[in-house]
Length: 212
Image (cartoon, rainbow, N blue to C red; front, side, top):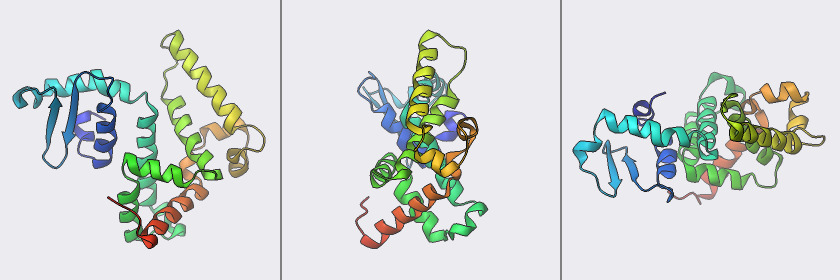
């Protein structure tokens, strides 16, 4: 999907702005969703920013690299959990409209995903989330590319195999299946992870410790 369409999604904007703010870049554009405009540092005249050429530059020099980061795949995880929570297939988990609204408020940002992963620390669900992100990264890699890309693929495959597909791992315990099938299985359909999401938002709702 093109950047101009993704910029209408507040979850994407939060993740993308976080990436754009990294100090490695000399030019920092930040998108203000409510105002539908870009803020640039160093400053660039608004007329030069509000053009198709700027979005093309963004696609070529920022979006391409964003898609290679773990941050981007955390965005994919976040988006799919939000979509799955609102689908009919979660009827058995009894998601109410209030639950769905609160889930988006609590989870739909970089800070939300960070807090969610901290909440899962030390549990089997922590491994499920990490597995989901790593598999998403692996499946997004192109097979051709160069020697460095091939090395990155092999490194990630090794990490997945050793951490998640070895005897006693949470992935094999939940999936009850072999390595090949498990890699093709969408971890976002694992009910234990979704139940953890529901528990996460309800605990924050009751304790009223969630801050904006």
